[in-house]
Structure formats: structure tokens, C-alpha cells
Image 1: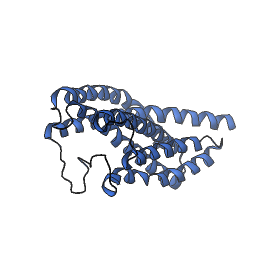
Image 2 (image 1 turned 90 degrees about the horizontal axis):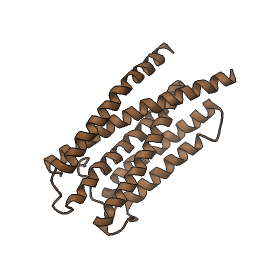
Image 3 (image 1 turned 135 degrees about the horizontal axis):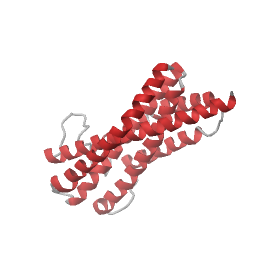
Image 4 (image 1 turned 120 degrees about the vertical axis):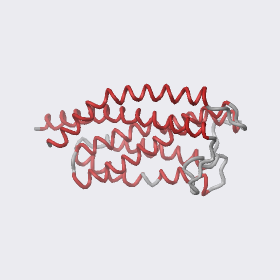
Length: 233
């Protein structure tokens, strides 16, 4: 209990730093993406949408992997803090995935000529979004904290299988979506150095934002858990 409380306190103390770091990093990343990096040879300035689009997608992957790790930790230890981490990361992951789909549609309209295409990356991302919305809905089916956390943990472990499917879908199937530019099987990024630097900066900025949102959401969930436990005592 002391260890968990100390970790929670440390996270709360780090929150202002994470908030400030998120703002600064986002301003720098946006300047790099909108001003410093050059237009793409084929897509022109439309490519600038991809800096935010790709960063959203990567952070969705991170969020759902954290759900998986927290779910394993909960089943192993039965500590409510891991359930709080899982639900917080799932909610943030759903937000990032939804933004990924919206930004992808905005990019697709001038590039493919349509807002939506039933191609593998788009479909598997939409399925991932729907599955984690279902995960969040499942959590509302029981008022028993331990039963709800256990069911959610099992589902959180199973659902992570869609993360590599989404990422590798463009290499497994014929797709309109471009192949991975950074996380490639041959480990050789295909982006111009300034574009790659802008993409990395945007991903770092979104990672700070994710960490800030996590500390805030976990704190809310821990307080809610405490109120439920006190009400039943």
C-alpha cells in the first residue's frame, strides 16, 4: 500500500511537468511539421496531415499495449491500481484511434479521392476501435469491482492481438494504404531526414500528452475505486 501510494504521489507531482512538456513539445513538433519540413514530392503539403495522423496511430498502439500489460499485472497481483491503468489507457487509446480514423479520412480525400476506402489498414483500425469501445462497455456490465476488473483484464489481453494485425495489414494484403515508412521489416526508414525528424518530434510530443492524460485519468479512477470501496464498507 505504501509503495502504491508513493508511486501515485510521484505521478501527481510529475503531472504539471508533463503538461508543460506536452505543450512545448507540441508547439515545436507543429512548427517542424508545418514550416520546417518540405512538401512531399508526390502529395505536396497534404503530407503534413500524416505527421499528426501517424503519431496518433503509434500512440494508439502504445495505449493498447499498456492495456495488455496492465491486464496481465492485474490478473497476477489483483491490485486495483493496474485495473485503473488499464481503463485509463483504453479510454485514451480509443480517443487516439478515433482521431487516427478521422485524420486518415481527411488525408484520403485529396489523395485517394474518397473519404473512406474498404482497404485493410482502414478496416482493421476501425475494427480495433470498435473492439476497445466494446471493452469499455463491458466494464459497465457489473458493479462488482473485482469481477469487472477480471473480465476486463481477460478481454484486454485478448484484444491486443489486433495491434500487430493493424500494423502489418498493409504488408500482408493488397492495399491502397502506403507501406510503413519507419517501422519496416527491413528496419530502413524511407522518409527524408527532415520529415523523419518531424515525425519523431510529433510522436514524442504525443507521448508526453499520453503520459499527462494517463496521470490525470488514473488519479480519477483511483478516487472512484476508493469511493466505491468506502461505500460498501
